[in-house]
Length: 65
Image (cartoon, rainbow, N blue to C red; front, side):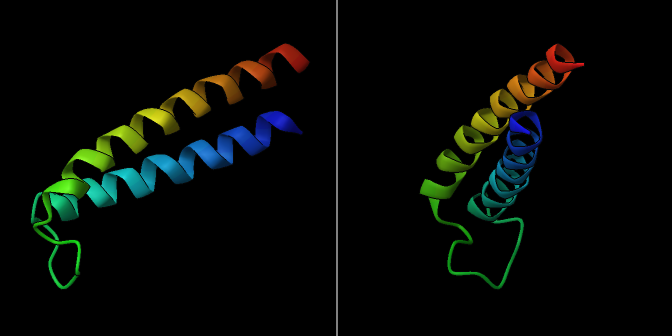
């Protein structure tokens, strides 16, 4: 069960981090976060955390089976 949770959390973090990065760089309009430099920094950090969670989730699923 833990593997699924890590996979879902990792996927969510990667998606949100990518969205925040795009908004921070100013490529997505109509948002309060558009053009804000902090989101261009926070986004990739969240993506990396999500990738680590995905790695451990896949590893946990492989170990179980």
